[in-house]
Structures are given as C-alpha cells and as structure tokens.
Length: 353
Ligand SMILES: [Zn+2]
Image: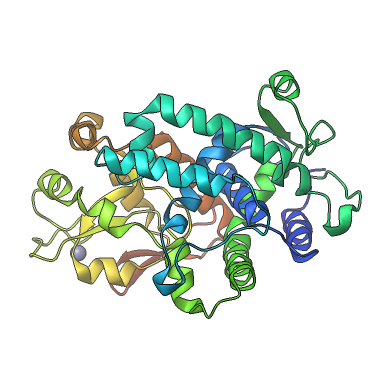
C-alpha cells in the first residue's frame, strides 16, 4: 500500500512545527526536496533517487535573493551559529556572477561550471551533516522515524568516504516522492510562512513581514526581463495568450506560475501583455498554453538562451506540469484568457514529451 499523501504531508508539517530551529536550512532543504519531487513525477509506490548535489543547487537558488541586504536591516541572519555557512557560499557565488555580468545561479552554472561544482560539493557536505541528518529527528534529539529516506548513515560528522559510498544521494522510500509532489502546493506556502517567522525571530529586528515575504520568495523580474526582446521576436510581437499585438509594456511571464514551481528556464517563459499577465496571476494555465510553450522549436529557444547563458530547462517544465495537473482535482479552473477558464478533465491531461 503506497503511503497516503495527506498523511505524509501532515508528518512533514509536524516535523517542522516541532522544535525551535537554529537555522533555516531544514526549511530550505525541504523546499528543495518538494521541488525535486514535483519535477520528477513517479508512480504512486515508486522510490526516488535524489542526488544531494541537486538539492544543493536548489538550496543555492533559494538563498540567492536572500543574501542581498533587506532594506535598513542589511543582510539577514539565517542561523544562530558562528562559522562559515551556506549563506557565505552563496554570497561568494553572487560575487563571481556579478564580476562576470551574470545575475542568476543558473547562468553561473552554465558559464563557470568549475566554480559552481566546488560550491556544490561544499554545500552538499553541509546538507548531509545538518538538515538532511536532522530533518527526520524532531527537536531535542528525539530519535524520530526516518519515514522519508534512510538516514542512518548521515550524521553531524558524516565523512566524504560515507558520501562516496552512498553516491552523494538519498533514496526516498516507496511512495514518498509521489506523496510530496501531491502535497507540495499545500506545504510550500506553510513552509514560507515558517521561514518568515524564523527570520523575524533570528534577526530580532523590526522587519516588515509582508515586504519580507516578497523579498525572500518573489520572482527575479529584472533578471528575466532581458529575455523580453528575444521572446517578442519569436512571438512575432504578439501576446502569447491572446495573440494581440504587444504594446510598449511587455511582461515576461512564467507559464507555470513561479509561486507554484520556481522554474526560470526559457521553456517556462513567454511574453504577454499586462492584461493577460495580471489576469493569469498564479492560476494554473490551460493545458493548451503549456503544450504550445513546450512545442516551440528548440533551435529558436537556444538562439535566445545561448548568448545570455540562460537555461532552457524543458524537462523540468514537462515534469513539473505533469505533477501539477496530476495533483489538482478534476474541475480545477485552468486559466485560458482574462475571465475565461477551462476545467481540468477527470481523465487528466496529455502533454507533449
Ligand atoms: Zn494577451
């Protein structure tokens, strides 16, 4: 019997609600795990092999906007311990990116793979020693039950030899990946709220919480804006959704909404007029929109992405779209155009592979 997704979700929520966190690492690694599961749809009782390096990349993506100074409060504290942290690694990577005229971690991965590989290794060790080891043990060192993945080999002083022996990876128990993908939409907003309240506590400052949420988790609008000219050409100057001619105000839109799945790859980006972009907001799009975005000619996307060292990430979009539609009940409204919604059919959807 595969585990019940809601039960898995409740146990995960319970892990995080228990105990006083000394850092936001557990929240980051859990968010990374949810994203990984969304992008790698599996059968209801399948296991899933998860490279820790993949989680490390996602954790870097999460902290990337967060190491900027937040208004007058400056750079926010994300842990209460001393010593070198993942945040320092992210700040170093940002400096390398800035010196090369790049603005996102994905660009840096394509432009300086060697620098990123060293940082990934360092971050992977930290994840193995801290949040991955601690995630399933509740506060106060209680034994806990490793219901997500076997963690007997992880510890605060896990060695490189042990990591090598486990191929720098964890394996989710049968059914866990499927369950996490199903409850990701429920858990992510809760997790972000915990993150905000942890930072309010760790920084003991008068931070403005509504602003803080956008600062921590908002999409990087200025970075994606540079793709607008290429996408506008590709769409012959028309809005992706309603096909009307674009005016001066062109919005780069995430087809699968950023708030549901943080994919900035070109396969998930289109240009739209403000009317469609604002109306669509965080809705799941009509299947046809995703299908149209995925059937764009790879060569055309590569031509836009290549010079900007921007990833395309088509496989990630296919995986995430498959999971998002599968996790939504029949009858869920899917945004087609302003004021018009399709209903998700009971038979599910077919996406281009
Ligand atoms: Zn439009």
